[in-house]
Length: 308
Image 1 (cartoon, helix red, strand yellow):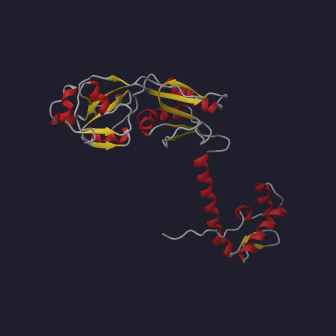
Image 2: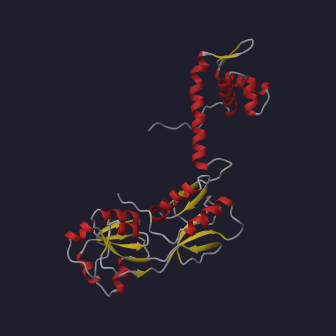
Image 3: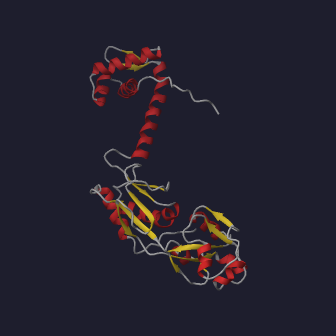
């Protein structure tokens, strides 16, 4: 891998901007109007750039400008650099007059519940840009630019207003193809005869499930282990075994037949997902619009999954 120089040898940005604008307009006067400076300032900045580079970029004709061969060769690199900087700035930070709303959720919730709704939101309110992040490490709002969070828990967090999105339950699921080829699975006592898929760190895992039904002595660490539910779900769809899924997040997958509820008994989850916003101050209008819109969609939490 090539080493990165500790100090880049680049001319000042203002000099490059003056050169690019003057080359585009072929006029120091028009470049000055675009940049909001005097014609003399543009001329001086271009001259400083030429001195810094040690070569002439423009031919100063009596009533016009013309690029030298060196200027013609240099212009595409300068223009491309400004284009890349402009695109990257807007992609990450949005237009200055239209700040994006940043919404944070876990990867599973974002994929199964949030993404389909944001597609609908985009169709209804295209003037508002929403940026999602699944780098989930809740901190105080404002420290990392997050406007809205979807958190899992009791809903009692200091410094925020939280609104429950939906009640949740968990139950064993598997792919129809797996169930057709696997041993009988009609009740919890049959589960030890099957391949298990574990979601590491889930609050309601196989240990809690077996304890609830009085099933003991199982090697809980055996089987496929995944660090997120969305990864486990894809393994389950592929026939990897039986996993504990959460309703209503997988309701659409059940409705389309991609997954099957093994024996229909669902256990209420201790906690659920909440839409969270800072407690103090009024949110900007675009943040309030996204928050209110998502809260109004809580009645149909399982829609949107397409496993094709």
